[in-house]
Length: 109
Ligand SMILES: [Zn+2]
Image (cartoon, rainbow, N blue to C red; front, top):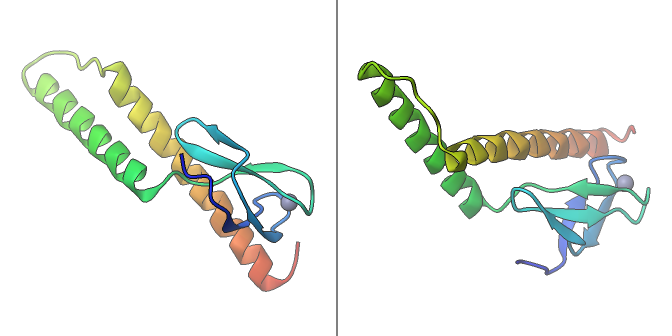
């Protein structure tokens, strides 16, 4: 678990700060505390975790297609479902961070 301080931007109020994660949330996304608005916000998982999630999702997709082609009904495993859910959560967090950055750069809140 990486706990070193890093420059982050609050996805709630777009205030920049240097913080250490206060918690680790599913699916491996660090949670930070904003000193400006007092809120808690999530940051995306590490790139390594994101790549693993993409690989798991790709394996799930290939397996599902092969099952379909064989005339069966694909039943994704729990791990595959978790990987897809994790990617969706991560992509949403990345979007929130990008929006906060855009707000901080435009100078409006
Ligand atoms: Zn904030």
